[in-house]
Structures are given as C-alpha cells and as structure tokens.
Image 1 (cartoon, rainbow, N blue to C red):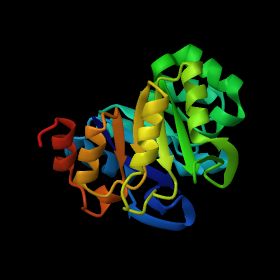
Image 2: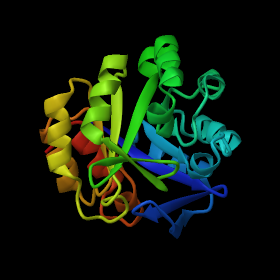
Image 3: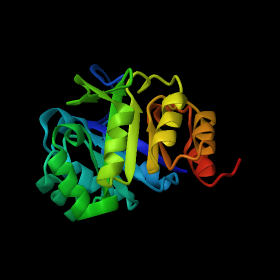
Image 4: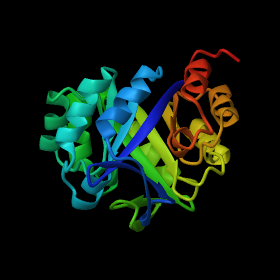
Length: 240
C-alpha cells in the first residue's frame, strides 16, 4: 500500500485542521519546504499536498511553494485544492507535479473533469470528501445532496483511475479511518482507492493495508509522533 504523508498549506505554512474547520487550525511547521524534505529523507515515496488557500479561492495560491517542495523532496507529489480549470491542471503538470486532485469541480463541473481525464488519464485523481455520507464542496464549507458512493460510481464511468476518499468527521481527529465506508467503496467501484481522515496509528495503516487499498494518507498522526516514518516505510513494504 502506498502511504502519503500529508502537507496542508495555509498562508505559506504547514497546518492541520480539525474536521476541516479553518478556525481550528494548528501550525505544525512554518517551513513547508523543509517539511517536504524531512518526509522524503525519512523514507516517504510519495507526498500528498493540499493548497487550503487554493481550495477557498479556486486558484493555485501556493503553487510557487509547492514547486519548491517538489524540488526539495525529489519524490512524486500529488496536489489538490482549488483546481477548477484545465489551464490549472496544465500548469501543475507542466511544472512537474505528478498527479493533480480534482475535488469540488468533479461534482460541479463534469465537463472539465471529462476533459482533464481524457487529456491526462492516470495523472488525474478525484477527491471525494463527505459529511455523513454526502459530498462536501468549496473547501468543505458546503454539503451537497449527492451520496459519496453515487459520485464514486460516476467517476469510474468517466475513466477516473484514483479516488481519494475523506470522511470529514474523522479528519484531524485521530479517531481511526472510516473502515465501513472504505469497504463500501471497494464493493461498488473497481479503481484505486486512497483512504484519508482519522488515521491515528501504525495499526490503522496495517488495517487499511490488509483491506487491499491502493493507498492511505497520514497527516496529524505523523506530526504528533503517533506514527513514525519507519512505521510508514515498514507498512508500505509489508514488514509486519
């Protein structure tokens, strides 16, 4: 299983949120470039970066910092947050980013998603973020009437190859991932699934790996020491 250390950017700093609430922000490193390099030095093989400012503004606010993070880490990077046009996708991928994550626009602008998938195929992932099973958009500030499983099925039909699923109620809480919803996704779609939100321990990573998922994202637990980078590399390599 691929494990993605997560770096969330707000005002040029690495932060963690609680259940997606921007008012509950904790700065975990003022230097995101150093953080990216530290994860890579510790053995990370792929980084997950979210431009929280971009998610709110609908444009790549932290693109320059992200480019520097990629250069410092010298490992593949996937980026999400406010990617709502093909021009933005082009810009990220042309700048060396390995995969872009389309979130809100996958629901609100299906024509854009179709175009991006047709042009870039596996370099496009879709982020499905849900509250109580319903898809949230606009930096998690709005909740739609669309069920997460229905959207996942639509994404598979479009040709999306990777879905990152976040249960917002678990994000930043260290209460464990939503195994029931991940299992439901596995039952209903046959594409790469990445679990996000709630990972609190090495045991959580092992459980997700044993489910047969393509990947998992670890954020807060890495910053507070509940998970070490040796845990990440060992679980990735099934050394347990």
